[in-house]
Image (cartoon, rainbow, N blue to C red; front, side, top):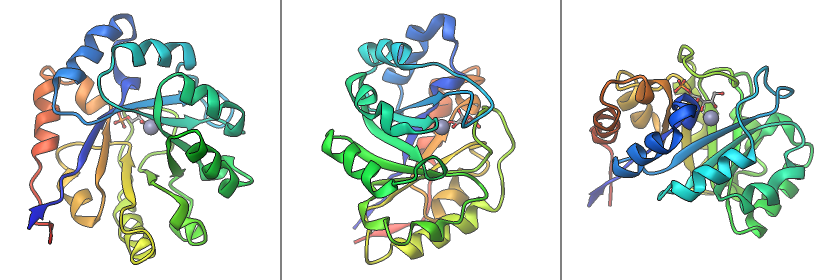
Length: 226
Ligand code: DX5
Ligand code: ZN
């Protein structure tokens, strides 16, 4: 019997962009599992973060997988570019994909893990007919576009619903929570069924970010698998 261990993905969006290599090094040396990379286009979300050249620069220093969250319209145009610039996991928004099944197949053909992100208002039930083709669902627990926002409590219900939806069809599905994650809600999120926690401002605004990552990773829950 072993405990399921959740993954921690610090969001680089909250890093010091003028000192990126220092922050990347911190994550490399920490107990974090992935780098969460937020790419925005100013159209799908009302903000612009950074693009593929910056992601490429990050990939040269990062020693852990890049978990790329594309907050862009028509993501199909950039899937290969995303892979070529170091992505290991590519997550597209349900709301931005007309042919989601095809998009997921393309991501896998590139050799990446395929993720789907849902905005807070998007029902997890909409994934029913594609759940078997998804490696990761990213449940947005804030409206995408900005770091440092307040966590939306309804997320717990969505996690439970999604675990139930995937049960028996995709038991290896990773459920990632993105937005407003702290040590105050992490245990409850994991108990509800989440297994990847993204944390931006909570990590990078900390005076001791490595220690903060360690605390998130050490969150103890009673979930056991045989
Ligand atoms: C928001 C991004 C998040 C963001 C989370 O659109 O997708 O990844 O960086 O930031 P915090 O943890 O500060 O809410
Ligand atoms: Zn994100």
